[in-house]
Length: 343
Image (cartoon, rainbow, N blue to C red; front, side, top):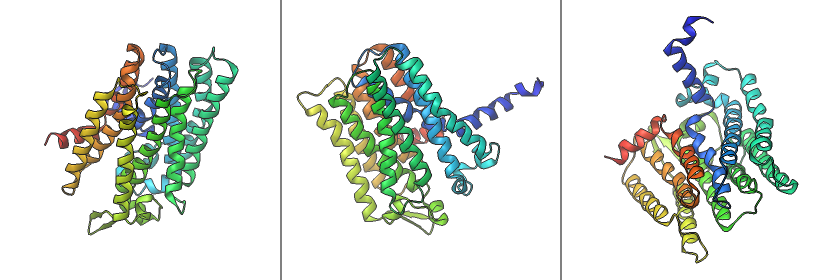
């Protein structure tokens, strides 16, 4: 093999291509979902099952993001943020990328059979597979029609139900039924994705989406870029604040319920307070970088982890925390969020 293959710059370039190709920075938001679902019904997950759920989530994540990039390639080619993506640069062809995405579907079901539920009874295996299939189907539908649907909140909801189905798959993969905590997490995930896709993501890409004729919730609700500045409409603000109120109320309501598990109460209350402080700082004026939005997202993603992690045995708790935190480390937006928070 040629010696230059091992050149540090070559290895680094391959790593960053893979990083962007599979959207590694977002992997934590995907990888935690089946672990959260499983942890909501079973505190003592085996190491094999936890590892299997992470493997299935990684296959699902690759399918979701690679197929999304194939569907949105024309838009991404005009988006400066994505100029380094291998698909945008032409380093990977759309056909090859789609082949990778589609291969992840049987891979996920194979990993489920081999690692997650090899000894589960037939009904439990069927229920888990149905939920996983629904997750793949919903994500495929969103990727195909997400930027062209005349009413984009509908496709945002389809995507949200897809991610929620992955969380429900984790609960069903244990062979047990969903609990009150599982249902809370499912509702939280739906609201979270509506916020992430309809507000955060749509505002981030607003200028390019508007110029290319894409249809998003933020554009539908009247957000605009005028004279180089983002203008938020009253309708979008009401929408975002309603979602935010639900995202804070759901876990606090669960903790206030006499039958709720209060193991994570302190962490959830602290994260909820930090979220409110972040929103208050964001409301004081325009922000010029990714820091505020990323800080808000990390806090929202951390609340379900804070609910579930304290009730888990040490090894599955470590797996959940690692899945949540490790993908954030190479993400430049994480450090932008820290710099903003420490100002």
